[in-house]
Figure 1 (spheres, helix red, strand yellow):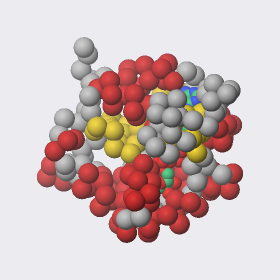
Figure 2 (cartoon, rainbow, N blue to C red):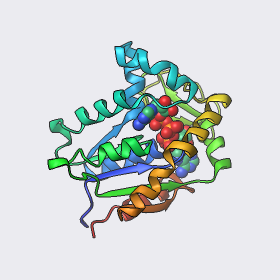
Figure 3 (cartoon, protein in one colour):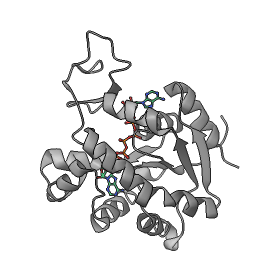
Length: 220
Ligand code: AP5
């Protein structure tokens, strides 16, 4: 098997397929998928102090404050289970977060080896987000466009109830695109200047995109 980078991040607009691809790629590389959106939603479901603080931001499509999220990631990347590698999805989402991450390696070094930018046109993103359903039990992610017509309410993996994410309503989606353009998009240039950015076409079949991302993760 070819050599692959082991500390990477996947970034792109809401609905680009970050979660879908991160799960596939982390599985193929045998590294941990670290997803801030899911970590926050888990805290919200459990009613932890972090979840209670985050709820109003997430439901409006706004970013959760930096101090909360940077602490969460710093702690997560220092656990033993990520020693063999990690794939970050959902972090960083602003230049401040990117700068904080750039000092999280040993002796305050840049820990990121590669940044994959998933490019998808906005009209495709809106369609994907409005059709997304998640399983309330196993948290699997699906889309009404690909679920069998008579099984759109139950998870094909565990039979749990399929629900719409609270921030997948038209107003929150619009806001998430605005926040993405204003705060997150600039990190592309930040990583391009550091020679870490690779652009990948995120359209087409899921497996086809996974192959492209894997190709972009080969070590130099
Ligand atoms: P987060 O959960 O990270 O949301 P997001 O960035 O808006 O991304 P999404 O999860 O909506 O999309 P995705 O790119 O993962 O797409 P997916 O694979 O699901 O964050 C949510 C909120 O948490 C934020 O708004 C913020 O409040 C807070 N937050 C998180 N991180 C934060 C941070 N660092 N700082 C501050 N706040 C933070 O795919 C979408 C749909 O398309 C699915 O239905 C999927 O099945 C389908 N699909 C995927 N790929 C394909 C394909 N190739 N073809 C057809 N359909 C596809």
